Length: 151
Image 1 (spheres, rainbow, N blue to C red):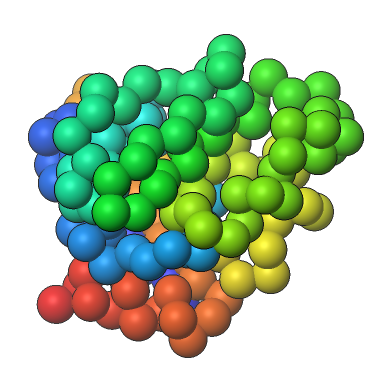
Image 2 (cartoon, rainbow, N blue to C red; image 1 turned 30 degrees about the horizontal axis):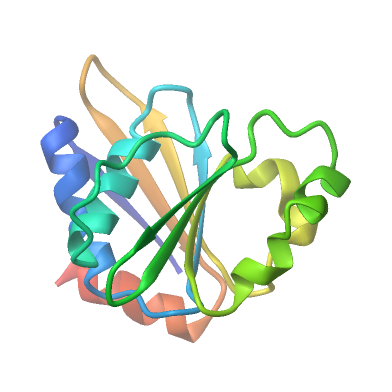
């Protein structure tokens, strides 16, 4: 399934993220791709709000992984700076595949290591503040999430 959403500003991007966050469960994996500055971190802020997490959400560009704990645990990853797949393995990537909701920015850089079922979200800048977010699912589970967003 593929579905494109458009957002007009950061607030709308966060709101869409919050709607997604409300539908997520432990073990879910969102793979974010797209342009630099297109709204991946703003979207993740929204996901955190949808999960009930009130912490300040910042890009993990230099830390690689930020964890946020509430009734569920969100692992926000940014693999932009990784030089190879071994680096991801060395930081305990596999440990995050159970017991967490994972949102990974620049996920296309390490797609060989990702679970079989992920929800891909590609971010495109199409105007000063206009963004297109293309959701692509390869599973009935994520198809259902995308369909619930479309209602």
